[in-house]
Structures are given as structure tokens and as C-alpha cells.
Length: 467
Image (cartoon, rainbow, N blue to C red; front, top):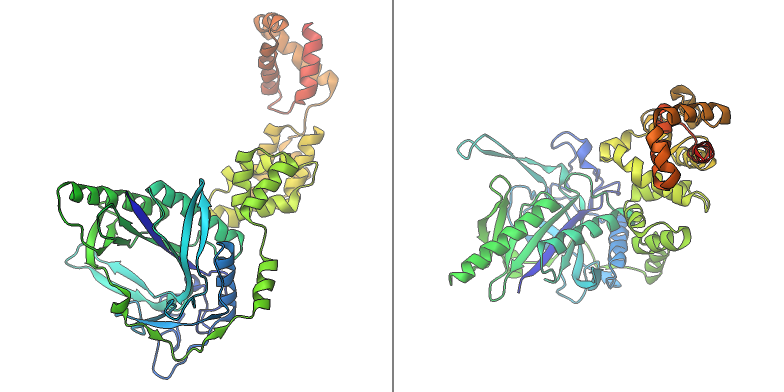
């Protein structure tokens, strides 16, 4: 039986400063080694000062994952040498004196399978290694310390996953959850990373690190399962070790023997006292948590009669969900949900496109109202949406500029319909005995009017003229 556990690292990207100093948490906007200070570099005489907002954000994550939240937490030094760790130790958490990490045991259910959370710990991110050189002979390693000290939450699961597909699904759900509760933006480079622990029946646990994306993690886990099964079938011992994912060759390669907790010589961080978390603060945080994705999806289905597949997509993405919440009414909710999931998602399908987009809730509201009132057709609405996303102009300006208004004048439409009837005698004959054929004729009218004909009026007039 295959067992897979995860160690997921999520940066708290929505904070202003690092975990133990006042340097910016958003290190991405700085030149290399510019966002550093004596504290995050661990220089002699410098003292860490805990970011209270980071504790609150991490507590919210624990609550969202149904984890226990302790009354007091402690920090430890995890001692090891690595070039991107300027202090030669990492300030992190460990449950030695009971549950003293920011989150205790919890669980998440995916596809009716319960995934247990072992613990959630708050810690500092190390720096970033940059490799340069065209081959192993001239490879050099550079270090950028801008990231060192960035607030990071590590979520450790039990080995409850049985397949790479389950791993991928869980990470997608977790990514949506973190964005929804406003603690992190997982789309940012390096904001969410995961290592996997893989073992097959009778084998030792193997850790896989250095994985750049969820897609690669799924591949790495699949390869590692296959590798271990191959060794097992040949009676070759599977050793406990850490392996790295080689993205070029799409294989895992041995890196080092797997360390145990004792190897890191953990001891209490003497410069940070035990932190007492007031139960009243926990209650306040819980009361301010946004509606869960599951609750939001159920509300969209039950209240607005939105199809489950559409509600699932709409509720799980904060950008689209926020637009929907700001723009919908009881009367236009279904139409707006359709515009967002059918048309808008294709226009702003990357982070960069979202940031450049000029779309607002008012635009969506006006667009849905115009469709429902028959002012413009759905086809014209797509063209208008493209222009709005690009320019941010009012819908009325876009309709005027692109001449998108519906052709709803009966006499004008009747003339166009008569042309179609003259050009399509066979279809007209079939339409008299087959009601489905009339849709073909409606399509021909739409072609002549470039999609601007009022579809309901067109259908009514066609039925009258072919009787």
C-alpha cells in the first residue's frame, strides 16, 4: 500500500514585514540582497522581535483547517548549515513540550477521504539559491538573502494520500483556501511549495524536495512510487533518504541521508519568550474569518440556482468570487455567473492579465442588465467585455463605439428575415415540419446582423413568416 505525506510551505504574503524584523515581507520588489538587515542576517548582537500579525494569520490558517489552537506557543532553533541560512539555524516550532506549535491536529476531506493534519508551525523562510553556469564543471551558486526571514507556515500532513492525483487535488484545494481567507497569494513565485514523503508497503520513508510546482510534485511522486516498487520487486532494500527532483530528466536523485529531529539539535529560542494567545483574540479571529469556499458554493447553488460546476469554479477563485459578490443581485446572479465563467475567465487567465484588467463590478452589472433587457445579444456582450477589460470604458460607450446594439426594430428585422427565407427555401420547407430547423434560420439572421438581432424577436417573426 502506498503512503504519501506532505510538508507544505506557505508564505504569509499579505503581511507588511518579515517574521522577526521590519524588513519588507514582499522581497520580490527588491534588487538582490537589498532587503536585509542585521536581524534577518543573524549578525551578532541583533535580537528578533516577533511579528504579531504573523501569529494571527497563522492562527487563521489553523482554524480554517480545523486544527486545534493552543493557548501558548514556543519557538525553537533548528540548527543546520546551508548557504541560504545566514544564521546557521532556523527559528521554527516543534512540539516537544506538548502542542506548542501554532496549530495542532486537524483534517481536510477531499473526495470523501479524510486527510489528517499533524501540525502547523510558524517559521522563517531561508534565503534563495541561484545557480549559474552551463554545466556541472562551471556551475556556481549565488545566494540572495532578500527572502530570509519571510513569514512562513509549514503544514505537515499524515501519510494519508494514496496516489499522486490525491496530492494534486489537495494542494489545489489548499491553495484556493489560503487565497480565500486572505493570508497568502499562492500564485506568486515561491509563495507555496511542497515536499513529499513517499513509502510503499514494507519500505522506508523517502523525502522528495526541490519541487517547483504542483504539476511537478505530482510527477515526482509518481516517479518515486514506480522507483520504489521496482526496487521492492527485485528484493533491493529501500533506504530512508532525501531525494531531489531533477526537472530536466524528470527523475528523483539521491541527495543525502534523511535527517531525524535529533540531528537538528533543537533547543528553545532564548531570545523569544513563550507567547500567550488570549482566547478572546482567537474568538475575534474566528468571527472575522471569511465565508468558506464550501459554504459559498452551496449558497450559490441553493439561493441563485447556479449549476454546481459553475458554482464550484466561481467560489474557489477569490478574484472571480469577489467580482461576483460585488456585482450580483437576486435577479442577475445567474447571468453574471455565466459571464464570469464562460467569457471573463478566458480573457484574464493569468495573474498579469488580471492586474492589467480594467473590469469592475459595475461593468458586469451593466452587461448582465443589458443582456437580460435585450439591449445587446450575448454575442455582442462578448465583444463588449473584451473592450471593457482592455479599456475600462463604460458599457454605453463601448456599445456606441463598436455599434453593438441589438437590431430590434420589427420592420428592419422583417426585411432581413425575408432575405434569409428567399436564400434558404429548402430550410424553410423543412422548418415547417421540423421545429429544430428553424434554429438554423435564426443563425442565418444572426450572421447577416453580425450577431446583433434580438434572438427572441427574430424567432417570433420567423415563425410567423414561414407559417
